[in-house]
Image 1 (spheres, rainbow, N blue to C red):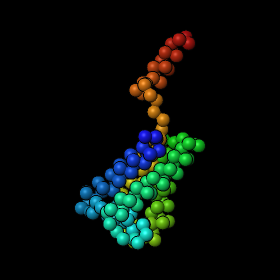
Image 2: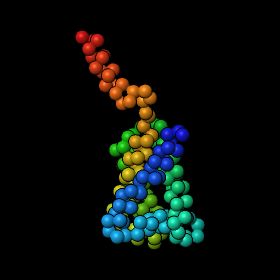
Image 3: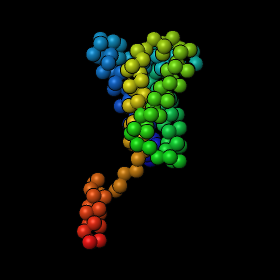
Length: 149
């Protein structure tokens, strides 16, 4: 699996954790955001199945946008979180305000989901050094600094 589809899967699955934890902690409906996303599709009917489809489409689309930006100007978790904030403003405040089910969602947990989405995409898009186990760079610096003395 290439990095962009992997980023979409990772971010799509894990970015809903903040709002889910909030719903569980407050006794809220853990599927409210999923059903609200379903109203974004033509017909505007709220259902969990439609919400899963809408969420998958949105995740794939925003991940593609962020991957295109990442190719030109790589970013990590922090840059991804900033991008997630921009996506949240567009999703929740510009588009979402036209949809009552989206507008009714608690804003804090939704913003947290978007920040998590961006951070996860940014982290997952970063290239992974194969065969170094994260230590190759440190080892090179230590060896390089000793051999140059």
